[in-house]
Structure formats: C-alpha cells, structure tokens
Image (cartoon, rainbow, N blue to C red; front, side, top):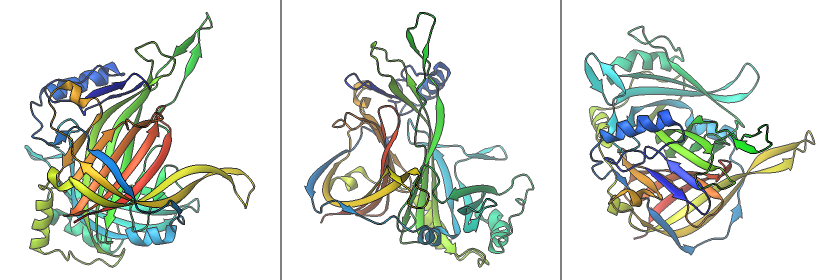
Length: 412
C-alpha cells in the first residue's frame, strides 16, 4: 500500500498494500519489486487488513500532569524472571502467518520459547537487563533449556545446532522508554539520514540513504502476562516526485513478529514448568484468536502516559543533555474500526492489521497533524473490554517526536 499527501509531502510505501494490486513503486527499486511480487501471490487478506481505525477524543477527563520518570530498579523487577510462550511472524500485507522454521520437510508457523531476563552490570559498569532466549518446535524440546535457565546456565540447544540468543537492554539506552508495570518501547530516534550534495554547477542534489529499523514494544499486564511485538521496516528520505524542496519520507514494512509470554518464576529459581495442559492449550488458542473488530468499536476511557525528549543541563556535569519527560492525561475516546478495502484509494491513509493473540498493529499518518509523518501503534487486548497500547510517532523527516503508553477500559 502507498499513500501520498501532497501538502506535506509525506509518503508511505509498504507491505501494507491492497492484496492483489501489488506495491506501489518503492524508493528502493529492488525492495519495491520484491514486495510487488510477494503481494501478487496474496489474493485475499480475509479481513485481517483494513483501513485505519478512526480514533477521536470525545471528552478530556483530566488536565496534563507531569509524572515521575519510572525507576529503573522497579522496571527491572517487573521484567526479571523466566517467561514461557510462543513466537510467530506475520506478513504485513495480509496478517497471515508466515513460516518461521522447518521441521523436517514441514513448515513451522510458530515456535515454543523460553526467555530469561536478569539484571546485571555490564563489563563497562552499565546497569542493564540481559535477555536469553531459546526456541524449539515443541515445548518438550525446551525442558532441558528451562532447567538450565533455572540454574542460570545457558548451554547449547539439545540438537547442538543453536545457541541461546542474547540481547541486552541498557539503562538510559537511546530510543528506550520504560513505563510502570514492565511495559517498554525501544526503537530508533531517527529513521533517516538527510544528505544534500553540491555538484559542479552548485545545484543541490539529493542522495537517499535507506536504513532498516526494528521497533519493539512490550505490553505487560498484571506482571504475569505480556506480548512483545516487533516491526521491521525500511525508511529513507527520497527526492519528491512533484518537484518540491522538501524530501518525502518513504517507509516499507518488512515483517511483524509477536511473542506471547507468561511469567513462570524469578531468575535462578525455576525447576520445572508449572504450566498445566490446559494452560498450554489456552496459550495455543490465543495464537488463533483475533480481536473482533466490533469489539473495539465504541467509547473507551483511556489513560495515557506521554514521554518526549527535551534538552536540559545535567546538574552533575553541567553539560547539555537530552532527557525524557513524562506526563499523563485521561480521555474518553471513540474508536471506529476502518472499513474493508474497496480499492487502492482506500489505502491512502495507512492500514490496520488484526493479528492473533488479540494484537492490533496500525501504521498511519495523522491527518490533523502537519509535522507528524508517521505513527506506529501496537495494541494488545488481554481480555474483553480492556487494552494496552504503545504508539511511537515521528516527524515528516523521520525524527522521533514522542511515545505514548496507554490503558483503555471500555465504557459500559
């Protein structure tokens, strides 16, 4: 799908296109052709891809209030432990699951996984969360790894072909924003590099530079359930087609991954899985459940925590630093799911993917904002009548603007 706003010269060309119509011309020809071919093979989206939800503020319930920055120690305590769950990936142009592995000659569409997160000091003395992840086609294959995780011993997988994947989340990491309860968002602060070159005739020329990014949002509910949603996409500023002076922001969605996990114990004290067969079946059923679109329709009381970056003087060093500022506000909002696609024109304002595990991904350009070029919103409904949502917004040139973590309860 692609969209163009001539007034602000913002463009979105991505896997979010109308299946069967192919992708519009991309800024990167090879990438554009690849998406084009993939989407032509997809003849329908089964209603999983719609026009963007319309979200309007019906009433402002509270004034804006400055809130304290969440404590890193509290955040580390909320996410620390062993998490068990499943991982799957989905096509951004249809919402259909994509193969994630091979089991012999058979394609595998989801993997069981265990994830251990513990607070440590790095060799450089940085306070961080170290994450170890192991995955397998079946949960029973992970039992040995889970026992090792209980001892905080991270050995090779049983088939001796894969190792534990290691990831680190550092305190004050650029692009990381944490929230009370264990939710967080991490991703780029700048989507693109803006390069203008002078030629021999001293005329300005524009050289696009494509970058591939990943935005990971974690939405944690009641300290024992969470989803981690990752969106991979390519971004670049390209020379405007209409001859304007300002470059256009060009986006291509590549992949969407969802991890659905349940907390099983603190680091170093796990002995065996406490999940019963009914728990395992419930988690598998969750992987087949998408939130009904009419369930989102209506009035919601939404509490939002906003975080933006401002420059200030460090009281210890006297140097100019950029620091996060948190604020909160409560609204009553009206949610109206988008219509089914009726033609290419319907895709001009973005798209919404309705994914398993009651996850909703929306990528759009706010029509009422002239300086916001992109909004990526990831919503999870752990149960009927409630949701958690994380939204990152960027300017028309791809600079980070703000991150919003919100909780919604449906008005009866």
